[in-house]
Length: 406
Image 1 (cartoon, rainbow, N blue to C red):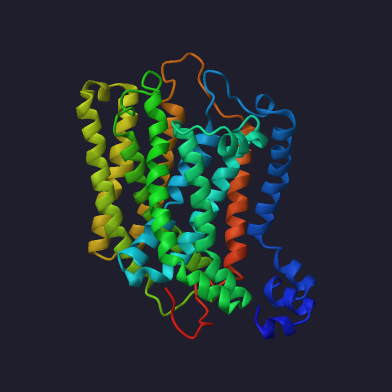
Image 2: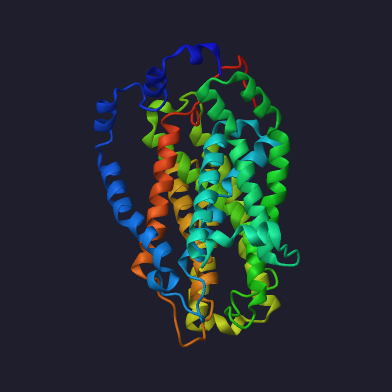
């Protein structure tokens, strides 16, 4: 800690760093906004639900069964959450490995979004586990090397750690710790490379889980290429989520953004990348249908829903991204990105819930407690993002080192 920071009295440090320079009374009054009130009401209902789930078990809080052991806590919180958090490794790779330095201003919010996304995905997974307190056993004691779940668990734990370390520079800038900041900046390239390796492994392995369910997953969604589907779509999800997050952040935190950065220009560039990735993803999905000779299934009810997914949520956004980027229609690009985010959620729920056990008599419908818990985790995640951005140099870096650092 710098000498200036040490010289501040404890109350001055708390007031400056935590209460945004306001007194405790004024700070509490500033929290009385419609957004924080709604968030507080959601958490007031959701936190007791979380306590109830751990007190009375899965059977009392969910509609899960032996036929349908995976619900929205896996499909939405984990699978969709991890995919949408992929903007961290996507942007970090673009900037620090491929040298696209113009995207540096949006790397920090992307990494923060990725870190919070993975963190709350893990919390959602913890709620889904029957005995989460036994989680350290398969990780550290009874090693399951050939297990796909074992590989995913370790990759997610390690990548969550990498994201935490990658986000330390803005924390150190906020605290004024120059030496720690200098050390953290030196690890950027190494952490990025390690993060790319881990992300490639677990994003594809999440799809690989469903290779073990050829008779349970509908033939239109089951394919030997499903690990590639998950990896490619995670890149599109990450790019789309960064576009959505940048738009919302620059609207909600106008006083904290760097107004010298042309965010619209960056969004157009991200749209070009998202268009190409979605176009590739669409044809890889068609290749899966052709490989299994499943064209005749497209005329069924599930087939029509499959077409809605790959045409409405993949091909159409790809074209809209391309047209929007060509004509610099930033508003269209942002709405297309939001539609793409919804499409990724639809895909993950299709694979893990809707098209899984598609021919079973016992169909799964989530309970209100499952929905409430997921909504509570989202609310806490958004509130955490808002708390951090309002205090730390995420949208506008502080130059305490006297130079622009990578």
